[in-house]
Length: 242
Length: 219
Image 1 (cartoon, rainbow over the protein chains, first blue to last red):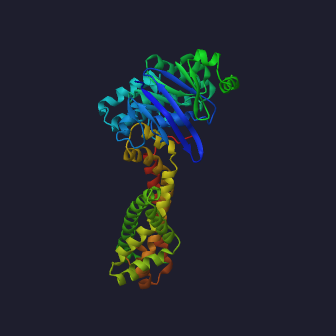
Image 2 (spheres, rainbow over the protein chains, first blue to last red):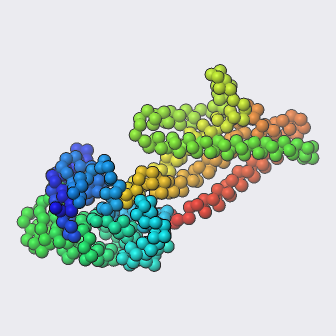
Image 3 (spheres, rainbow over the protein chains, first blue to last red):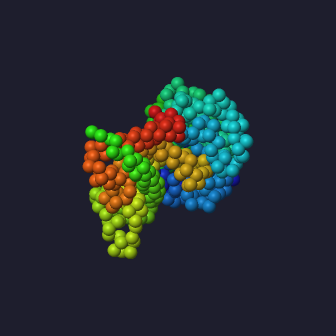
């Protein structure tokens, strides 16, 4: 059974069809990159996977559990599915340590004495252990995004979702974030990413999913998809981002 | 100009000042409670409550506070609710301060980006945890300057309570003036007392604010 099973999912915003029957499986340990033009439904699909959006029709299962906004253990479910956003969304009134340990402490995952060691551990994994006592606003965009990733890691998620996490960064800061994500990929984390970083998609992803008009238009390993696109839509998309 | 004849009224002046401070603090506390509850109700899904809160705000912000006080003190007894002067003033001023607080606190809550709430939800926090740990601190910071200046307006506004003969500072001043006929001296003194109180609160609020909100502002 796949870790994530998406079956014929439909979603409308007002009268606009955003998702038009999306089906997709993601295996444990797999790294899947979703690409496509803006408005193709990539981010919406990602947000549906952890119930930030509710689907109008179809079903999503994660670890065999049906996902929807009113699921009884939504909070426990979200602790297992981490999401990193384009805008970092760090809590600016809390220092880096507290940003990371707030949720593990409040949800009872760890005790007080374990908080700082946990923060140091996950910060070390994103190369920012020395920033544990900084305020988020004192960090660069790339550092903030790495703290946001560390904050997710502190919950020991089984699945990580990345929603255009490098899009808001200055070009010279993109690399440091991608490097952290590559390291996570090597450690076997299951990851679903929406990204415009084609180089990253090509080098790190096991599978590329091209979305178009709210559907999975074409998918396959990067070696095949980027070299021999089968549909004219994907061919023209690849040409446009080169 | 001669301030000496006022010296024998110093105890009354001190008592009046204390009553003014009590009135201010009581009305501020209840007003903030009303304000927070009202702001949460305004953001809630229940339409009749939203409508009720909205009517309350408009009613109290668009009528003279002196009339509000008179209604509590002179009209409510007709409906069986007879309050002494101080209590009536406390109720009227709480309602008045509450009406302004609702909007201030609501806009403080609205100033926190929705994405912050989402980030909290995505970490598996409950609604209350998100409210207290993520939404409230930045909301308070954003609402703080408006709340504190409204507080000073409330402090000055307590002088209205003299009109129902509550023993606050302005009422005491009227009493002393009627005894001594030293209008200039009496009103100069209570002006200075109001000014000193207002400035002290401003300094206090600045210090408290600097201690409570230490994180750097969002760029």
